[in-house]
Length: 223
Image (cartoon, rainbow, N blue to C red; front, side):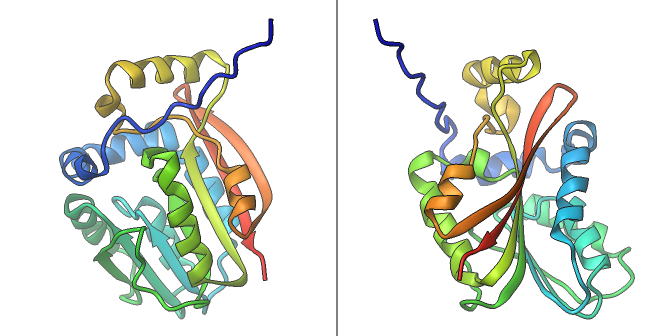
């Protein structure tokens, strides 16, 4: 008999629930971020290869763990960070007070409709957001990312990913039982979707920290 293809696990937390969920999680997010995400986030910052004077955008800036480092590397450039959650933005704003200059902006924003000009961004960074998004909606966001990036611009993504190793299987089971316990995140793989929406995947790496699996992707916007 032919083998049945296992269907990918779709988002189990509605988009309407994401903002209040992350407002509640904002006070404790840094603990989780350092415990389970810090290696992947550090690699993403490295792959961003920021050169001073660039136009940088981080979508889903969270508490500013990555944004702080991006801005620190780009004091003469343009640095924008947006997030859906006021609670997360408040934490990011507090963190950014220590960056040493004010060449950045933080604002409420939605990845489905970026208030950014076409072809204006050199590097776009997005950490742990697509793992919250239903598969049917991912293309709309990728189209927005491609719209605002300059041809050849860099897209750096980090997401919870899938794996047959023990840790990821535990998290996948926990997600099915209580998706809000994991902040609505489930394991995904974005490579094929990026190729379908005007990006070329240059690097994909997988990191596991605290048994939590993350994929780190560097893609470039096709001309």
